[in-house]
Image (cartoon, rainbow, N blue to C red; front, side, top):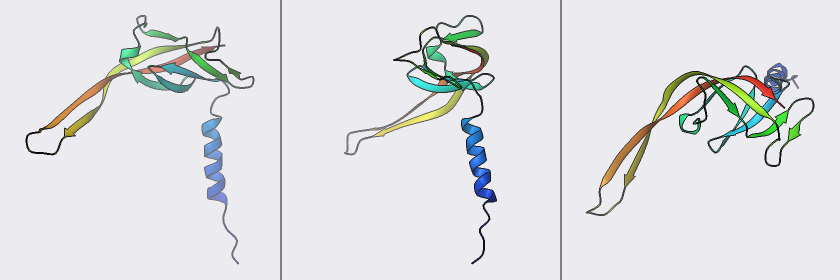
Length: 129
């Protein structure tokens, strides 16, 4: 019976571990009803509508649900005193989303409608526990 080569399996495993352990300190934040896992130096795309409290080009997220790392902290529902500071890199629009509605029968119509969401690219600058 020939011996199987496990090098590809080990490579996949190491890349998976690198994905989960890419940074020692990370946070899970809530923005616009969605949750994001962020670490310092990462880039993040969020919806523009929920960033009403943005100063010129800096944003502070106070809804930190968890801080991970060597000493993880889990909030109930948020971690008290924790915040994540991010800087706006650029603003753009997302891909076009097409909403198509059709009802069968003779007198009903078809409707094709779409929109593009305004998105903001952020760079995470610091995580304060």
